[in-house]
Length: 395
Image 1 (cartoon, one colour):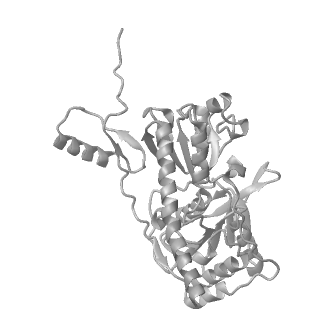
Image 2: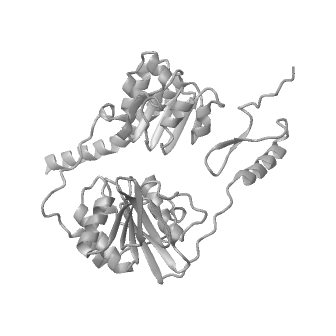
Image 3: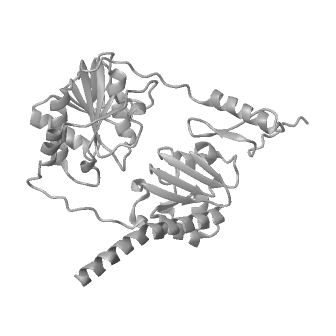
């Protein structure tokens, strides 16, 4: 019988530009110098080619994209809105991105040519009037031909509609198709598609375009004039106030709404240690179907095609091999980290980072590191507070 030699999953590997691990091919028993040369060659072969920068004539025509950031990053819907503007922009059009909050993402990779950040309007601050005033000031500063926003329920859609109403501007909402000549949305309860020429304000539905661009923008970060910033900040809400936010226990958050999830699979034997880690991290708890069937978790914690589909920013899988159904459930997660003894497990192909280790010692080590970091963070605060108290008493 003919046998096929299995590729050793623990062979030398490199991390490609996409962030995924690629096993290096060729002779395993090469000298160190030759191995380094081979690895460098493979790294350059697997790395994505540098993307060209989109050329445009500054100051001719502008498309303005406005959106909120979440802890310095744009979600996929917001990225698609920026990409839509960059795709339809011609050589005489620049793309300006207005961010309500900070932006730590690569603005050029998003397709933006200029970026304006307003950190004072970052979430979870509820300041729709200030955001609307900032958008109006940005429109006055750049005189864009059109304004694009993601049509979501977290503030951008509301700001876009209110701006169009105040400015008496034409608007298209729930746009599902866009090109340089027209936009389109569903009509007649989804039975037909209605299209029109570009209006002044365009609110894009998710998945209208892909956020992956074959080029990059200029990525120049600029600031609004000081007078414009002061005018935007001075807009005060008239009929409502920001009541602040309430910190919920991560265990009370539904998996579909959780932003940080850790999941346990068949490789997790110490359930108590796993739940303790979830409390320390402030993460919601998920599980694979096997772990649920074994009775370790309730059915509402199951992640996968037959359970919950999640879209967390961070998803850590402990001891989960990654069945097709489970991978379907985490397809929309932004960053996936897998902790598994088997480097060739299917979840390793989906993960952005794979830790080859047993789940139990990995959980213990992570719990210890997080506790130490929390103590180091709180110690200076406590010392400063104590110093202030002593000063007050002495005075």
